[in-house]
Image (cartoon, rainbow, N blue to C red; front, top):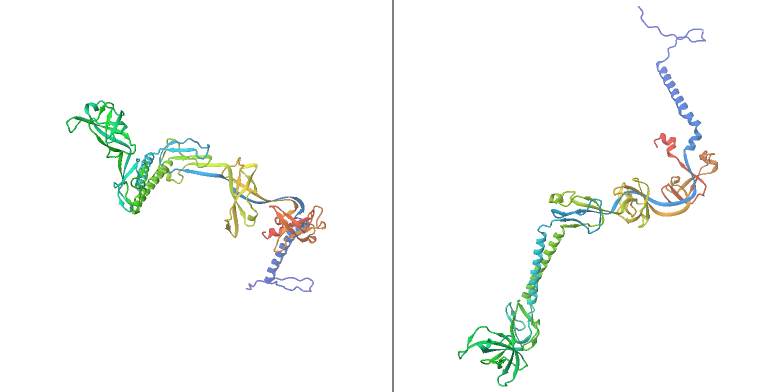
Length: 544
């Protein structure tokens, strides 16, 4: 049985006989691909190319932005942002622990610099100060004694009867320096019968008779002994001391008698100097100089000699060091006591108060990260820091006016001035910014921490010819602007024929954020155009 599949027969018209034709399989596959390509091309044409051809003129118009060169006022500014802070702020910290005795302020109060904020119980700090002050007094006394000891002096007036030292001698405390007597006044001690002495009073006048010359002198009873004595002849007597002014001839060898009223003394006696004293050294050292000589008259307080040498200098230096140490102890005690009284370091508003009267401040609270007792802000002025690009920093000068706005304070513009310019710039990704500080005295409505936008007015250009900054193509050479003559524009002012656009080199002047001054190259009223990147279909298709 023949089971072979019969071949497909294809009839070809116009032939006298039927011819059998079998199409190749590969040709049939390419035919399908060709038909698919035709469909795609047709779709592109009808969906994209044909509409673009129909709207070609509109696309050209939308490709450009335009502006007319015109005269206008220009203010050149440098713009940036910042965060407002008080002109001054202070966190009041404590240094001592204890009970808070006073805290006479509240949050929101205005306090002046020096006002009391806290008074803390000083405990033993006051006692420590008193002890330190006593130590200073003691050290001062020791120093003064050491210094005075190097210059021994007499504390009374008189004649130097004897000098017990000479230059070069070494003396120690207690060594005799000089014996001084005051003979301008002499005393005469005489025995009176006890019954007579009982009738004599101190201050009573007496008549003194000098032995030999029988000259009489006036005297005054200075003292009367209260104890009876027995004289050589067995009589009871008492000693009466009479003071006499020395006319100049009296010596300690002169003898005399005396009568007090009608009462006569029982025996004669000799005169004595009214004062007779030996001055002794209170310090140690070598006698480096003598200021007096024997027989000379000295007044009370007269320096007799000067002591020096290693021993004396060491003694004085040690006394000086001890005094300084005591004074430092007082200062430390005073500083410690002052820590218990805390005053406002600045004038400002109390933002935070952490302790009140009656609270106890302990060491854990002081050492805590937020161990502040109070926080003060001086918000009479505000300040903020703004970053300025390296290309603009040389335009900034101290005192330039700054206009400031804050989103949190709508409808209000603040005015400030450039207060500081910091040349310590910060570079990020190859671009350097410099911080400047702006000071504002008008701050109503502003709060610390608010964000602001600021414009530093660096120049008032006046009325100048301007075009938009975007219209300038700076490139690598001289700046160029594209000018559209009237014939290149349609009735709506849009670019109709780009082939008529002109490229002109221009000289630029100052600029602000939006506009730039044209000094030379185009005239007022001319139209400048530039590519509108946002409506460029080709740029959009390419992801531009």
